[in-house]
Amino acid sequence: MTLLGTSHYDFTDLPMLMPIAAQLGLKGPLNGARVLRIVDDYSLAFFNQYLLGEPTTLLDGPSAQYPEVKYGQP
Image 1: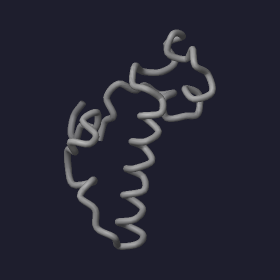
Image 2: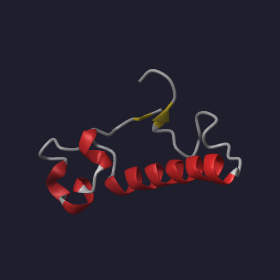
Image 3: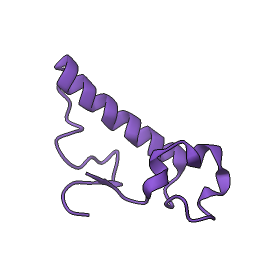
Image 4: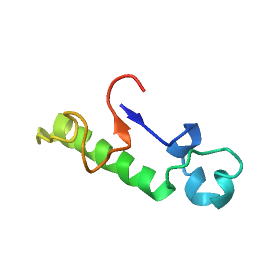
């Protein structure tokens, strides 16, 4: 899976703590709150499915809810 519109520091707290991170080239153009929502939802779906045995369709492939998430080669 690839989250389009992000870069390395998008997966840290930096974008939420430093509003000028995008202007400094430290994050991608995708909104920091949106990145957090996507990462949270996919992480929760993964753990619920593989640790609790609760099936989810979110991990099956592309989702209309999250068009920024691409499966396969970026």
